[in-house]
Image 1 (cartoon, rainbow, N blue to C red):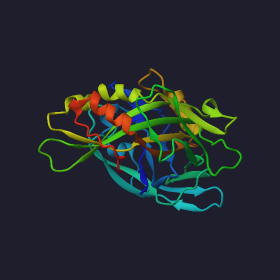
Image 2 (image 1 turned 180 degrees about the vertical axis):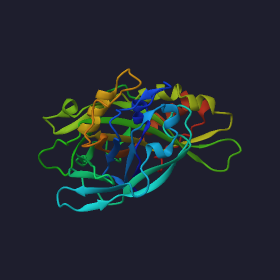
Image 3 (image 1 turned 180 degrees about the horizontal axis):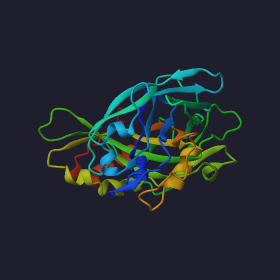
Image 4 (image 1 turned 90 degrees about the horizontal axis):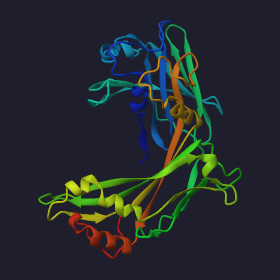
Length: 342
């Protein structure tokens, strides 16, 4: 089952809104269409968030749905595959955005997204076309991330997380054909220590995970031209310190709790050049900017880019599982010499 590709709006919210009571957003020259879309070839459904600018009190206007959103019939949205010119209409759908006390961006109400269930192909360019009822055509284009495959670790590899040696995650463009480099501007590698938990008195096991970030890097910096692969280094026994200091485990481990090991998951995420430029340029100490300094939207503002995540699950070997049980008996982990079943 693939995932739904919802756009994360936290970054956009921080860029365009602040806690100041009276700010002018963008300009007073009329309506501006604001676009945020991440193309994801691994998603069943791709979404785009389309809003419009306003002038006035941010705390008041940000809560006014009509001031920030297009109504039915005001815009027509489609996604075009450049290779063959095929057009995919994007239909509106509403999604509930839970209340977030740290965000002023439409918390606690429905938001309109536009979506397509069309299959997107890796390494291809797509164009978003928004036609407003006033005749203005807003557009942007981006290329999906080239597909890539794991080289190391393999799915059946058992990793000793008590080792202090340097290990590597390796991946390369797939299929194995030149050029081996992908068009991703940047990669990030994150792993998740996964387990099942049964609290005292509970009748069902609950899946939990602990995030462990290995690092990120520009594609050119982490690409090995000799062996035609990308790589990210990590030291396995750092996991022991992460478990020791995990707040949830420390505060939710009463007597009698039971926890079973699951395979550790490693996620490699690649992002497009537009997204990378946006993150770098807009990552400033200023809480508000009159106009975003980076946009690749014609006749509008915002961002269209691409990202994709590929995952690999690996086995925490018996030595490491036994060591975790011995080091942290209060956590209730159960040692089983058999490999964990996912």
